[in-house]
Length: 285
Image (cartoon, rainbow, N blue to C red; front, top):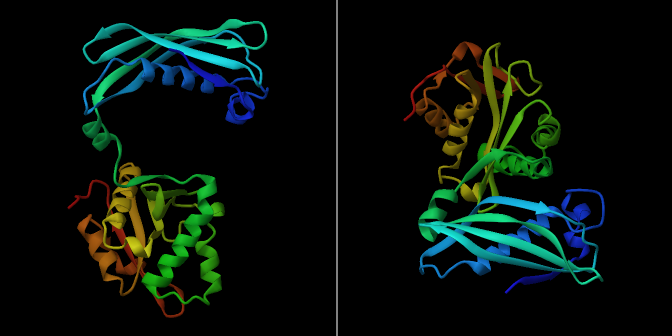
């Protein structure tokens, strides 16, 4: 039984960014064909599902707004967990049913729970998107007020913390997401970048490590640090820790960082920052 759809403005190449004309977008057509393969799957076990692994589709004709599209799929080959479907799509744009697409889609049967455990991390760390950077700045301010005692009236430094959109031009800003929620961030810069404060030639510096206060003591700072180390590419890492922040100092020491008192500095009166350096290849706890 084919799946039937009507092409709306949300289905066009313009809406999906795959072109600049108001006709059915190829990505939407492929999604409709994949949905048809889900309908056509043979009966699976209670703990099983199928996932798409290969798509080979010819998009043969353009479909205008308002046209009806029928997507059809049938199993043509099965080998253990592998299922291969022949798929076709026809539209009715006023001249009856016209073939607009044909090809094959391959799916693989998997056990649902183990598949999700492998593919859904409890914490996801990646580079921030441009539209996420303002929220990164606000999280920094929230964390520094709650964790480091930064006064809310310290407008100057709050402005620096909120400046993530500008800093991202020559630094890598990472975000930590838990079920889609922003819960942590850190910025990485090489020596010579505007954000690098103490890095010397050949070093990579990370700054603005911040975790949302409601997510403290849940391993997020440790996960961010491991992400920084992984991205350092066997280069020396350097960071500054405000004097008195012993939890951060302990964490860095555990990951092979060593304090270098000769490089300590005071960016503002009464604010002493201790410098820690991790050489390439240092051990991990």
